[in-house]
Length: 158
Image 1: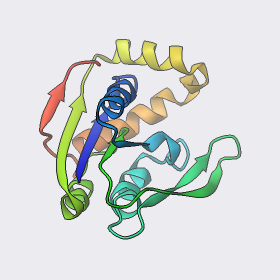
Image 2: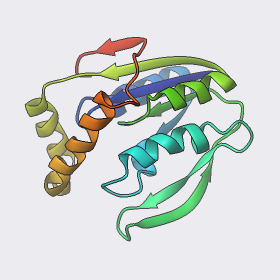
Image 3: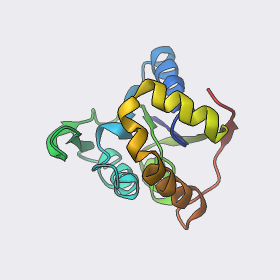
Image 4: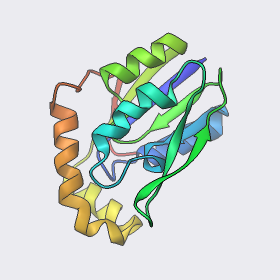
């Protein structure tokens, strides 16, 4: 079983790369965006990757209902299947350890200039604009805080 963890700031191209890899490999694709617990939930979702998504017996996650701003249904993940997990917060020491416990791990981080990333993110989702600064602050903590780890591959904007 192979686990590919793709991390990067908003608008860097994580989802595009992950979709292309999933199409080429047939790996199951998991988006953190499906379970961030709201706009202040980057750190919580990072923990959920290690504890829920990569659970060795019952992997899955609680989908987040963005319209109601509440936890929604449980989404099971096929056990013992190769995965691509993408989203800001996907790569932490805990997620790498959890992934190593169930398979071979490849980590990727995508980098890009803020102006380009912001333009791409807001073109995709104009409703994101009021939350950009709040989310960017969480990204800065994630990429410079104690959970920050080295990755196998660093790429430019995808």
